Image: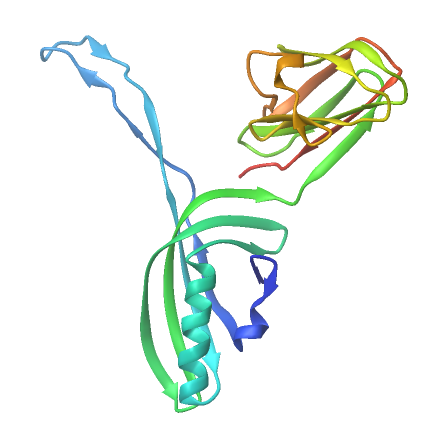
Length: 223
């Protein structure tokens, strides 16, 4: 297990419990005037929770110091277990009991903000498809590079068309995470799009209008 890419061994502890619940939703639909007519409203997704327990070993002073350092590290963090990453905020924590004078159990409950796999990517110069196996959509981060200067390049992900203008030779244009950057500067004025690219669950169709530009698509499947 990793906490912010750090092995939890550095806190002289190990996980005893790691229980995350599934997505939960509430429906805001209501019936109107006690009739059979209702307003569909909207479906709201709530935060999932993650319940954990950790065993800390060492002298009383060492355990107290390691627990304090550990809680500071995890209070707003990314926990990696297996191939999944859990973006979390701490909700509550408490001592459970002292097993011996050299060990202590600590209970921590988290609010789960996101769950995603390690990053994946494809590189292409032609039309292709990306299959998303997870049940939730995920953002796509694009890296567009050409060995020659290009006046205009169009990539379409499903129904989202992105037109990139004035691509300099051997300079990469980065599109994603709310930014459009090239050469360390904003390039948002040279890009036409309605929204940042998103990959949906299932098959995603990727089309390009020319084969002399290198397109790299990076993404993390979300659960």
